[in-house]
Length: 315
Image (cartoon, rainbow, N blue to C red; front, side, top):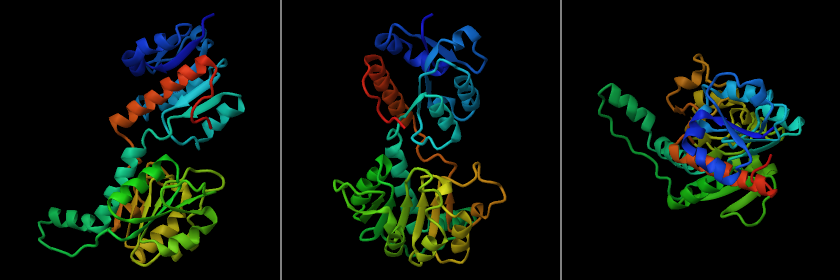
């Protein structure tokens, strides 16, 4: 029985020849949303959860993978594997790899957009436009301001590079600094100190048992009055209620949030209506180029898998 690779029908249509070039010993099964025949499902050894399956066909694709008893390796386009389903695969002995870093450029660019928008009062200007109100205001420059970046993976490093272009001073935070970071970098236990000395704090850390709730009420209370808060990591990193309280009270200058404790963000959340908050729907990395880079990481790993070499970004 020939082994098979499971991917979406979209990926198969666009890259079918590449599969054959890398591993002619494997068949390719394209998931179109319908159940896979039992005989074919039993042959699935490798699966690629690509971005085109998200979000509409994610449950169907991952559910199919869960029933693939011969599955040995699952690759996902996403950087994070904090969803419990990935732990289920690892517990079964399935190797799980990611395309971590593929979306780092657009996410970092989005962070810069947030900071520029907050510093220039763009949310208020957009409301003025809707109401046809001409109300010039002075705004702050980012040059010379201090930016704290929590998480120095691919996204955090890209944020540092773009912040340099805006002539900001950056301090990074990671569990154990290596010494080769492009900016001054502190260990995680100095988070409270970092929050107290920066003009903007950006979360780009993964969600783990160690980082869950790391930005608690004490960290938020220690932030400078008028400073900005940005989260492109995971919503569960933050005490959301404490953040809302600080924003409502005007202690923070504003926040830009792409991720939330509950997604989609509930319609009743006060974050939707706060005048100093920018809300985006977990979309900071959603670009065609990021999807293409994620595919390239998979095919590089597929060649490594066939050759028996170590896989990139294994979790």
